[in-house]
Image: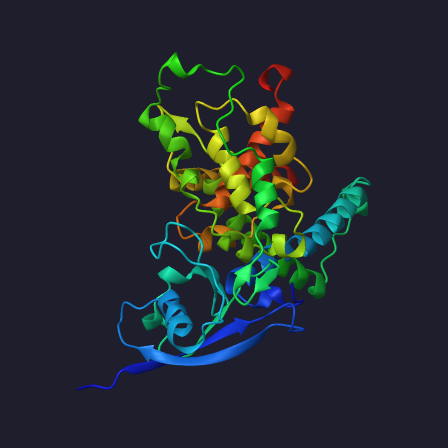
Length: 247
Length: 118
């Protein structure tokens, strides 16, 4: 019988009511299965070692976007970060960069929620279509225009990776702009004119200097950097084209 | 953000290098504008700046310019989006076309400079 391997997890602990600043707490846990991910390790700690550790999670399969954290300094979904890729080295788990911390590994996402609402992430029609008006028909090519951007799960990894947002949190940010583009290029949508004032604002797409790290860390292949650059091109073309091309 | 944020990941570092290359490039172009102004007195009164220090500076700036241009053009595939017959043109093809245009423009500029300098 072989002895179970063990792995060291260093997790951020922070209670704003008691602590002046965050600190790392070390836990040593069994690494019993090569399919274990960082989220499994946190769940083991919470269930068997220290029930006071706070973090968000839900689906465990890279769909809900809840379990994003800094794993050894890189923003990752902890349900998709395997312990085997780090063992035997210790793993440091911290809350996502660039966000206020509510407690331990839990970040405050309110800022993003306000920005998401500002870009109106829903299909906008100039004239409402009655329920009995029939289905919107789209070709495969029309769906392909926005499919990639619609994969965003609001996990906030892109915001944690973005130094522009880290330096100026007024910046609209990668996910919000990618989601705005998802609707702007949807053939059913007519809301570009309503989103443009937010997107073309000084804190909108033009704040981005194309670091590109948002697209590197995105777990769903959304490529927010591409969405931002293409929106820059769109806003420029609308500025130089005749008035008839603006709505 | 900590002051040394750009040293934490290689992508951040190379991004800062890409942005920094604009600075020496701008300085060299300022000098170039001054040279054009000096050249307006005609060929007899014009003596180009050719000290060893300046040649070394120019070579370094050339390397910076090449790095900036290559990284900029490589990103074109993410920026430009064209459809032909309802199908998007592959980003690699867009990048290739940018490099081809760059090479063609360099040949034209080089030809004009060399031809008219004779």
